Amino acid sequence: MTMETDANRMGAGLEGAEGAGGPAAADRAEAVATPRRTLDIVRRHGFVFRKSLGQHFLTDSRALDRIVEAAGLDKTRGALEIGPGIGALTERLAQAAGRVVAIEIDARLIPILEEVLAPYDNVVLIHADALRVDLRELWRTRFRDLAGVSAVANLPYYAAAPILMALLESRLPWERLVLMVQKEIADRICASPGGKDYGSLSVAVQYHCDAEPVCRVPPGAFVPSPKVDSAVVRLTPRRGRRVNVSDEKLFFRVVHAAFEQRRKTIANNIARLLGKEGKAEAVEILRGCGIDPGRRGETLSLEEFAALADALAASGKVTHSGFDSPIG
Image 1 (cartoon, rainbow, N blue to C red):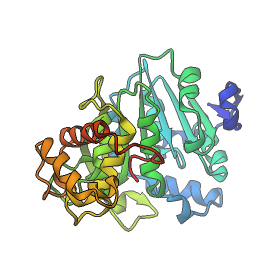
Image 2 (cartoon, helix red, strand yellow):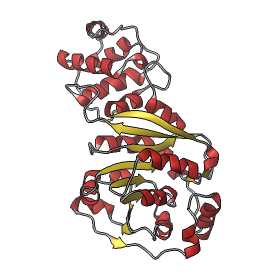
Image 3 (cartoon, rainbow, N blue to C red):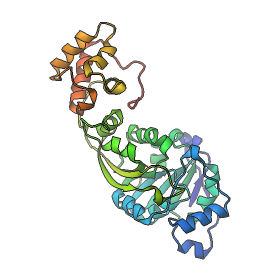
Image 4 (cartoon, helix red, strand yellow):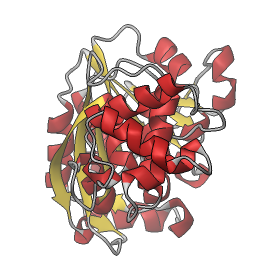
């Protein structure tokens, strides 16, 4: 295993040092993903879970099987893991993939990961905040010689959406993103128009990828148990866009506006983009796109959002100025 400790220098190139020595042979024989082994490691290292970091360690081997299977890895491919915890998934990825890069924000977990992953010479461990890592530089230095790369991770609940969007907006040629998230987030990612779960996150993800659920993971599969169910989703980036838009940032501004006040009609929400007297113009633009102004944003498809955004761009009265986040 290789250890990286200065991830903020990644833009200038990665420089690694060899990790610590391995655990006893008896420890190596048993997988990390069992309640007994997980609790043993935690107690031996005096580790205390932090709610602020969303730390729940997966101990269910069946869930790990589904995750690794969904990723479609082999020894010619690589995997990026964010938030490895004590290495339960990392261990399985190392056995399946040619190379694994794992990014962990919590310094207290680094000695544990060095111990658990010592037997694997195809793992690079980076101590860093994943949201501050230069993913393009990481790809160039660690993955460019591989046949394909997937992001495979049990994402912390508190940062799941920002990390997901960072992966998508990196514009890197991911083969798949196989992610465990809170079930509520998974439902939103995979939702279709017309349902209560469909929103700006659904549109943002499906703009980039085909999204499908893999499995539900109950609280008892983790140590400690979270209060809610989790779920695994598989996202497969498209080679071409599902919709083409003239101004991508404006497209997402329109999507955000449509869901900002869900109970209001699409005409009322879009009118807010057009100014104080914008209701009549919003109605006219919507009708020109073949969209009933009395509908709500949650009923619009990606294609309808694209047509609406392009019509607003053509009007010259709405821009993307001051808008950065596709999920609000």
